[in-house]
Length: 121
Image (cartoon, rainbow, N blue to C red; front, side, top):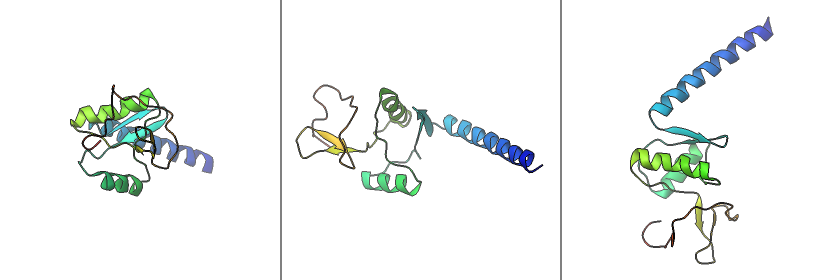
């Protein structure tokens, strides 16, 4: 009896999650790649605020590690006609980049001669 009740609860939760994901997809605030969920609130903010909001929600700022991840981030850029902050920074070696925690990038997809260090990249 307990087992059947737990199965019912799990089914109900899965159904509710599925419906919520559907709504979020329609609002263009969620997408997925490689088993990861990428989400946005669609609001413009500076990098510090973005990092803070990601941490508050139990996530982290997007760090693309594949073409699929890159496309997931680009989905938001195009949907909201804006830019996106990435979880990378320039290392102590000029023109070399790393993740915010200091580990080396394992993927990049820069345009030719980018990032140039000009403006607010």
